[in-house]
Length: 290
Image (cartoon, rainbow, N blue to C red; front, side, top):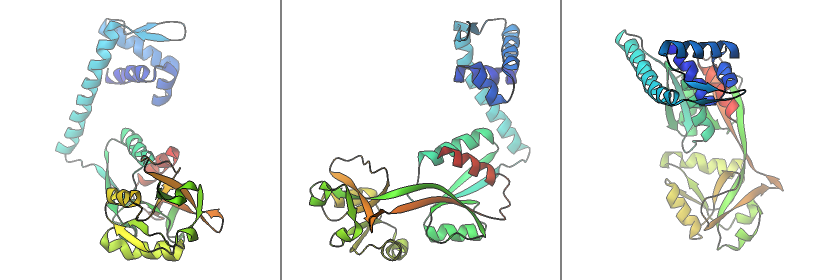
């Protein structure tokens, strides 16, 4: 009966027999027959069928709500039984750059967890060097990071997203009237960077040597502090994305280098000989979110 209940829940969730059938990899006629069998066993009509649609009966509405609790409890009992029986969940370790948390990553975790409920995802946040060290030593399975070095054949390197750099500038600055800025135009304005103390030298080298900034650098560990400095005209902060920012006291201006947008590649990295059997599954799910 539990399989039939799950079919019924999918039909209601998707409001479609076709989509529910696709979710469970069976035919539409098969899932329709299973719902009818469930109704016969319960002795009530759950769905009021029309030509190409359906509505829930009052009994169906009641059963749907109660069945969600029932199935959640059943899944929890099964999971606990596995632990009692000595079966431990597999753990997939994912390293994520500090400050990098996107809807795509969160959606990927949600989809993966639904597909592989017996695999636990453990997220480790860190700076670039720390994450690469953990990956190199096989302490984590996947790293989500921006590209700061040439791709190596020792790793599988997947570009997930390419973002353009913008400068967040106070609306009181004359530069905020522009839509684009060469980084050389900002040489007299301090560059505000989010960084821990141990990562400051790495960030300094990246922004100066790799990206070509020539500004004085001000470091802070807190995003709110960085925003306050920007609003007060004490510098600009590099951001990535669409250029849309929540606060009205600042404006995002696209950054150029020699007339071309500055870009940042966000990637997924894993060792080419990675032994985790679920690494590839997570990567494929993650790629579909972008």
